[in-house]
Structure formats: C-alpha cells, structure tokens
Image (cartoon, rainbow, N blue to C red; front, side, top):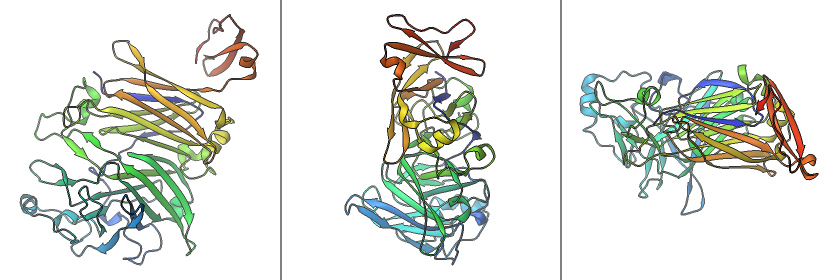
Length: 416
C-alpha cells in the first residue's frame, strides 16, 4: 500500500501552490501576531469579530461569549517544570485563564455546544499579514480526543459534524480573498461590509474528524513515513477543529484577480499533509493528500476531496461555460497497475453559479486519483457523431466519427 494520493481535476483551472498545513498542531507564527477579538481589544482591522455555532435545539445560530484571558502573556515560554505539572490540572468549566488556554489572548464560551451538551471553551489561532489568512479555533475543555505523551498536552473535541462559523474584520483579505482550502465539510465563505463600513470575511463549515500519526518516542513512525514508505500505518492521533485558509489573488493567483471571494475552494481529509497544484496549460488541478491507512480504531480511512469552483472563474480564466460540465470520470490507479472507478459527482448550481465536485470512496493506499471533467453532449453528438479529445504536446483537439465507427486519436496524438 502507498501513502500518496493525487486527485487531478481536468476542468479548466489554473494556478499552482505548495504544501499547506491545515492543522492547528504545528504553528510557527508567534502568538503575539495572532489576531485578537475586535470588541475586547478595541481593534478595527485584522481581528476576530465573532464565533457562532448552529444549535440543533433552537435551529438557529448562537453567538459565543468572548472574554479576555487574564493569564495571557504574548510569546510566553513554557518551563519544563510547568510541562511536568500541567497535565495534572483539570480545566475549570466556564473559566478563562487556566493552563489549557495560556496561548490565546481571548477565550470564547459556547454554551451547550459540547458533545454531551456541556459548555465549551474555545481558543482562536487566527493570523495573516500579506498573503494568506488562517482561520482556526479549537476547544480546550470538554471531551478529550488526544493526549500528547511525555508533555501531556491535551486536544479536546469539537463535536464531529457540528456546524460553526467565524467572522473576522480585514480590509486586505476581505477585498482580495482568493483560493480557500479547508479540512471542513460543506465549507463556505461570504464577504460583506458591516454598518461601520469595514469589510468582513465570514467562514463556515462542519467539523471533520482528522486522523494522523505522531511519534511517541524515537524510532516511532511519523507522517514522513506515510509519504516515504509503504503505508500500512494506524493513526494514533485524533482531532477535530475549525480550519480554513484563505489566500489572496496574488502571485500565482494573479490571473484570477477580480474574481469573487473563494473562486476555488478545496477541502479534504488528509491528516498528514495536503498540497494543491494547478496546471494552467493542461487544465489540471492536483490535490496530493497523505494520511495513515487506518484510523485509531483500526478501521480503513475513507478518503474524500471536494472542490467548489465559481462559474465566473471558469469563464474568466479559461473562456469556458461551467453549465456545460457533466459527470466527472474518476480513475483510481494502484501501485500494481490495477485500477477501479471511484465514486464521484459533478454538478452546476445555477443559484450560486458554482461547479461542485465530489470524489470519495478511495483509501490512502491509492497512489493516484485522476478526475476528468467531460462537457455535455455537443451538436455533433446529437447528429450521430461521437467525439474524442486528444493531446499532442501542449495542443488539444477534438476528433469525431459517425456511428457506429468510434473516433480515435491520430498518430502522434494521445487521449486527453
């Protein structure tokens, strides 16, 4: 079994980007640069305005209650003595400032949002300066999902499939929000202007379970092994959080400038790594994701990737009409040369002018998954002609034949 999956969407997309971390477990930005709550700190830009959760009981969005963390010290270095005692201290429900929240300037109380109806305390990890904004928050009380060995750090559970949204004020990112990536189900981004004239991003999604590998001692397998060796590993780390990254229409995304927010939205469940690449000339999107083959209970992890592409992005960048997109062909290729059909769907939603693509039912032992979008039947097809799209170098051309004959690619050309 292998550990890398490539999902190629032969649609009409462009751009390329590199490896992007989505988990909150490996932050490299100083805590002093994390965005704080707008109201608590009298901030008017690059700040968190609100966090809400959808209550299944009331069937409406409920606001969390923000509070300053009295123990917060920017860039505070945790001493070894503190590390040795921290896991012996239980969180106090409803109290902001105990050790679990030491890294955040603010806490957010979500009343009744826990797995068993308990109140949850949240901390945000939100930051961005010029290229990308990370929108992330986790719980730091409630049901424990993972305890890091030796150090004793604990991860707490945001209930799987629960629905949350975060609103941030940011003139820069709201006015140039571009490509979005997430580890959420049903993600969505809305950009709007408030009564104060400030621009906002509202990001929404359902919580997804993420499984990964973390070594407990020297020599234990890690996510690197998922990439570099045969993947028959079982996850030892389980977490849930809210995580959406938004990149500006800048650098490789410059050609899409002027498109609406989140022109391309990719979301998946690779717990170890995820990389997004766009091939302009060949019209391919590749999402490479890595994860252990089994979850913490020994069950095979079912992989999935979702893409949401705004219609005017397709029109603007590739001079194509999104409503002519039909069912995608998903091909899964294995290391031994065998292949199978993956479950997939592609549809155009006129109300939102989006093409929605779903690919699922594959495992993290599959090396390559290629998704090819096909156009709807052309006039030639309706006249009894069948067609085939072929490539020669960077050139692409459609050849037709009248039934019952089948079209074929000429010498020197190959099927696209």
